[in-house]
Image (tube, rainbow, N blue to C red):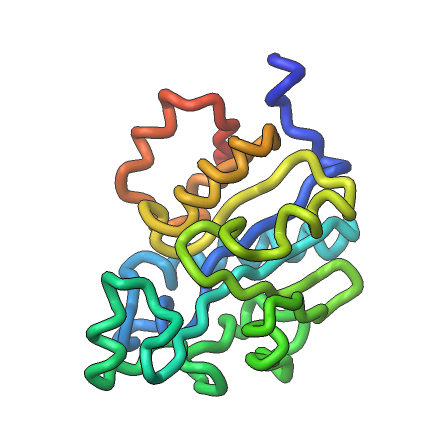
Length: 201
């Protein structure tokens, strides 16, 4: 094993990316096929991390109804009235299976201001304005403050947000685990060429 990339479980964090109702539920306005089937596997990993007291960070998107904070590739659709992860909507919420309690709801104002919303002893929600979880967010500082050197990445729409986050994380010399069953995973073959540990859970 390579000591530089071997995962360090005791100093790891679980990053769950964009597992929100609008992206996950069948027939939802921006459903990513396959995400709903991955939820049961993500739920198991969340439970393990809670039991051990390791950090969990739910990373989400929120789109203003006027499209002002939306990526250019989706902005026109939002301006024309498409409703995707609008702050305060049910569709923006995390899947209940992944929350410490189904009663927890996003604090959209807090999240859009750039702050993390704490929902458990070692569990937070964080808004990201673009695909990568490190772009214009407090994630790097938060992980550093927690003493994290290893991240486990899972979530929705692998080719976009999870993959971008993995690239950003590798630029910060973190150890990275990509949990194979915990994604919608087209193009996963690409990762056999990268120095990323791939869990078979």
